[in-house]
Length: 434
Picture 1: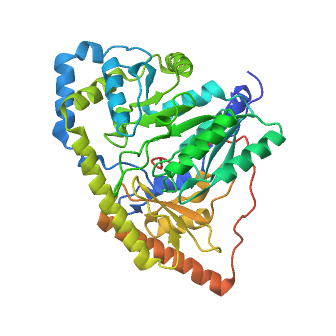
Picture 2 (picture 1 turned 45 degrees about the vertical axis):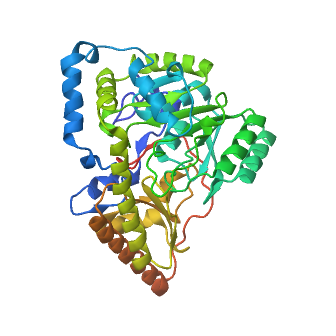
Picture 3 (picture 1 turned 90 degrees about the horizontal axis):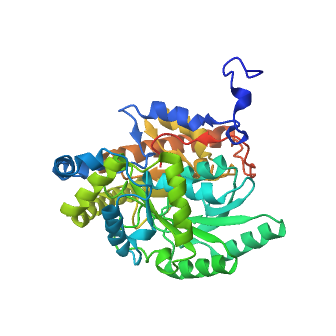
């Protein structure tokens, strides 16, 4: 053993891709924000207390009575066949026609995202993503040394003209674009939904440029007023890898997600899955399978919809009452509202004061690979009650107004408005902000 440093004698032995791996300063703040007196509008945690306990205990009992020997054993790398058949039925609600043979069960959809990235990315390759994009995806792409290039998004999702321009610019630079990563339904963090017209046009752009589409859809069934357009995968079976999860429509603790992929990619995903974990969680698969066999799972999804719609309404009405001069997205499903701050404020710099005032949020900088986002805040309405949401937004409004008053008195601090290029550091996202 040579070199290293006083804190880590193995420092010089780590792979290059782990250089600078560290928890972000935002993550450290969330340890304080987890105190019970703090209203957290930060975490994307589903409200699992709305899941009747008897539905879960009944599924557990059936598994231990009927399938314990298999559920407690290693399983296959592709996942339980009967569960994959159920997954095909779940996806059919969004227009997808598929075979269970092309489904690979994973340890949550985050694992599926990691496996796809592992299969396709070499250091220096480019991933196209919405602006902003899911913090967990940015971390995965960076960990495989990809360059994430953000593409402009508006209230109808990814902007086709901006996608064309980004592709042309990257091709001019000689860079290799491996796939487009998109969350088309009730986007995390922006809360917007891609229109059907945009889905068709964006798919055509990717086809003509030989770019794979990675469609991540954890929130699609959690619509409020009307369903989202049918999945991109329903339009094209060969150019799209679709990721799904039971974390939002059942419970994240089971850690059961999946990937639906074209045949050749599916074969490599199974091999990568076996290489990473031998087999996905057998016990969790059996319990989820038993739940889908016996429970009124569609009725339970309806229950979640009603609960989240009520909380969405509480957030929007309270924002309108206490921060009427600001703007925000108005999601038709999912968990998130994307708030735009006055030009003089910086969401990351303001967070310590917010936590001191007993409210937490996720700064917009978490959702960009290049340092942008200081002018935005992601607010989650999924976990706190409507009453807590009202208290939290009121506290946030006090922080925003106090900051504006300070600026009016002493002058503005400078918000970074230049793009900061990614470094080799891979900051882990704060806990529970997925």
